[in-house]
Length: 90
Image (cartoon, rainbow, N blue to C red; front, side, top):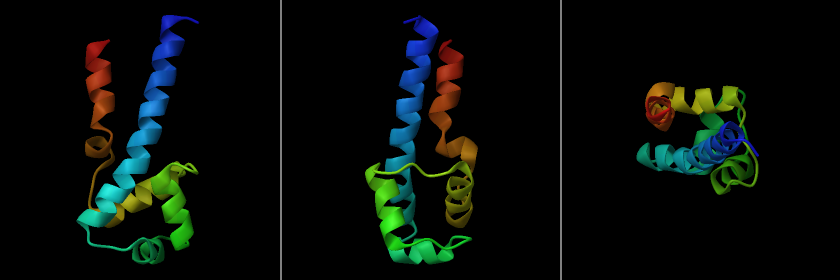
């Protein structure tokens, strides 16, 4: 496997982890339950969906992640800041 492919896979795994743990961190920072966050989303989602995203059981779509970031007042750039660090290392 080429080094670039290994790096891409590593970055993809890290993005998945960041999305999973970050959703929970943002939600708790806003003092929202999973159910409350789900209701604020457009379109709304069930509590179990939020739980599955936070546990990494299912992957969140880009649009849904952007919606959560907007609800929590967080920019995509700050949320995925590790991508900039990675670019500067290359």
